[in-house]
Image 1 (cartoon, rainbow, N blue to C red):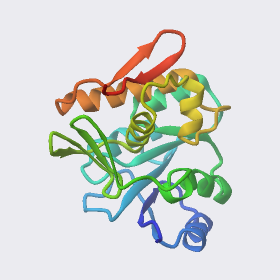
Image 2: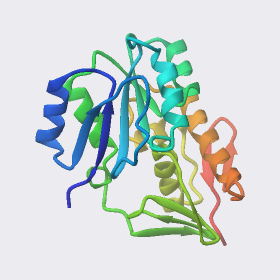
Image 3: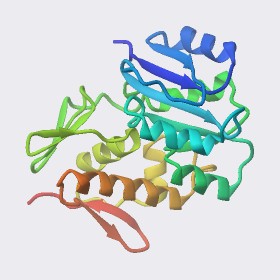
Length: 226
């Protein structure tokens, strides 16, 4: 089954769109201006945002994508001009899920896209995962608490899958970076804390008790239900 979805690009690069069309035919690639789309986008949504844009900054574009209903829960990658630790932190604070160092090429784009397509990452997951009254519907890519559904960002959803599939195991920050298929050379440990913090806030905002425990100097664990 071909994964379907939408890819949004802030750069005008016909070669990138062609690469997606050839390698991931179920993904529709679109260029966007300073204002995010207001209409519904089909399937999962990925956004690649350049650090510098003609009208606004890439950071502001990330904020606008997070504020727009159509892209609020998309996976946003900020394309940095250089590998700068301050720029990375600013990208995460602005709402990016991750980042890479440009210029963006077809190889980089496809590599990052393939990391986030579930049928290309590890083994095929179960249709549903449960942890008490918290349930993840993997086919619909939605979480449910006491029967009520709520959305999670892609990184949050994949982290929660990993923890629920592996309860009572402490995972270091570096192992969680690998779990999400990130490049450990560009993603630092503090970024993992940002991901976990976002996951906890998302769960709390929907009434879900925090299921994760921080193990000092080691990482994070989801305690099993005994």
